[in-house]
Amino acid sequence: MPKIDDIHLVFDANCAPRRVMGLFAVKWVSIVLHALDRWPGGRCRTGQLQRALPGISKKMLVQTLRDVEARGLVTRHVHSVVPPKVEYALTPLGKTFAEAVEMLYRWGEEHQEALDELETNMASAQALIEASGDEPVSEEN
Image (cartoon, rainbow, N blue to C red; front, side, top):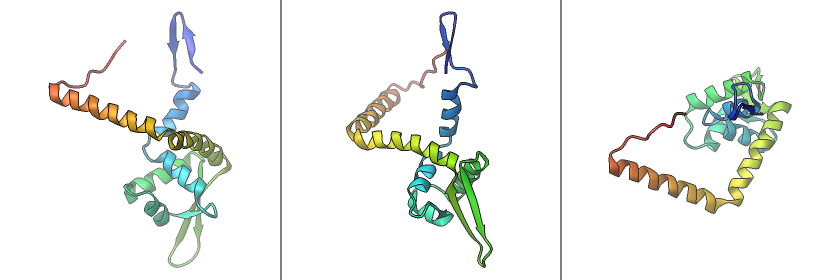
C-alpha cells in the first residue's frame, strides 16, 4: 500500500497497486485472462482465442500469451499430434487474478451509462484540444 512520507502520499514501485497495474499495462492481458476463465472446458487454442477477440493480431495474442505464461498465470499444453495442437488454460494463480478482472468487468456491465459518459467526456476533451491546436499538457509536481 502507499506510504505517507512527511505530508506526501508515495506509491513506490514495489507497492501492490503499482505491481497489479503493471499487469494491466499490456492492453490485452485482462481480456485474454477473462476469455480463458470463461472458455468452455477451461482450455483454448490460439486460433479460437483470436477469433473470440476481434481486433487482436496473432502476433499480439502470442506475445500476450507468452507474457502471462512467463508470469505463471497461464499454462501451455502441447499435444504430440500432427499437426501440432497447443492449448492454453489458467493456472490456479491465473484464476485468482481472473476473479479480480471479473469484478471490474461486472462493474462495466452494470454501469454501461457511466462507460458511455466516460467515452463522451474523453471525446469532448479531445475535440477541444484539437480545436485549440494545443498539445496535451503533462502535469509535473
